[in-house]
Image (cartoon, rainbow, N blue to C red; front, side, top):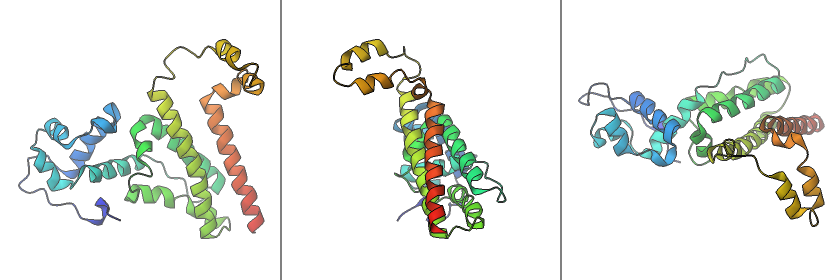
Length: 226
């Protein structure tokens, strides 16, 4: 596994004044938040920083390495739970924070699974949830699997959510449910009945319902292992 975290940053001597890995990451984050992953290029970033493109590579070896650094910078926005907090409260709070951070940085959640998340902030985020679970008596393997299960649900939900919002789903006119119902009323009556359930049209309610189900499932599974 290759990662930017396995090498030390080069010294900035001889480079343009003010150019550093931290400055490059800050500017890259601005570009990513405003325009997304597709618009990030080392050449355009260098122009924004008033530097020659090759000078960026002194501090960041590749574009992928830069995205790794930006990914971890966003993980630094998490307010880590108090180690004394019970594990359910800690996990719920962290997962709601994950969703809020993903809304601020829609590109970020799309990189998870594609890029390494082994930077100091990402590791601190993961590690912060182990202590409450271990203190509750869970074995490390069970704690790790439990966290992974909850995080997988949240990542999947939030990724779909930010894609929906990014496509203009929240800004356009609401769907014509009557027309949709007419299209499927005879062949798929249960689907049509579902359209009248108001809870399904709330992104917050959907998220909380799913999070409740996953956490309750973890609690039930953990109970059988004690």
